Image (cartoon, rainbow, N blue to C red):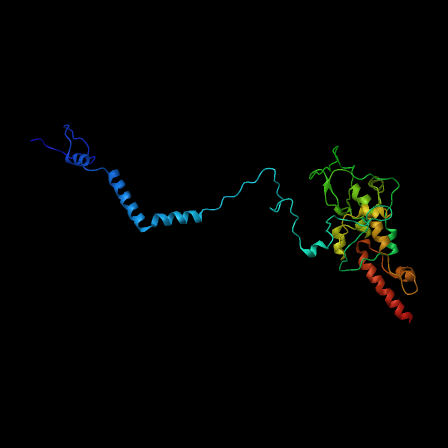
Length: 310
């Protein structure tokens, strides 16, 4: 009697002695899985046809299919909004009566043809900005002209900044190369101004200033118009207004501020400083660094003098 072993690989595998086990023989004689599946599919289709499910599914497919978009000829053009180009664009009847809006920036021009770019607007600060004739006497001047954008600039026209060898300017607060001023009174960093700032903001030449051993900086004179000094006085910064002040005929920004913001006239039409020159001589020595405080004190004494006269 021949012994049969069941292989570890499962039914249908050949045994080691060349015989075939019972499981593989049963699979060969039995109908295949594919044949059974085909029989079941045919039976299910017959049942669905009897119930009318096949016809119903075909109707649902035909209604649910999206309509195909007709392809347009390449010759036909289309407007950006999707309508044909021959049709007029749809607009509201109210908009048809209005003139189309132009978004071009139009600037009013003066008689000479240039725009009104020379108007200077400085915001009002917490304190009134008023200057006297004494402040006007402290304005500087120069005999030699100064070319802006040359001293302290390289061959490409770029400013040379140097945190080690450069000197800091009190006005623009940039540590640059080039000529800088040195005050004989304070002898500090506030007395250092570059040539461009000294000329554009105060109308002085740095080369002439360096040859004057008694020169005092704008801070010591009480006419500094840098942003920090103006804020300490309760005034708003001026910004870059040199070109506008120059076009208006002023030598510098300091000349524009002091000459356009003089002391107001009294009832007799005479300046308050001129009418009280005697009181000015009785005041203590004028300290330029506190010019705004002295001006207010001076005006207070003037009011007292007018009241005593009455």
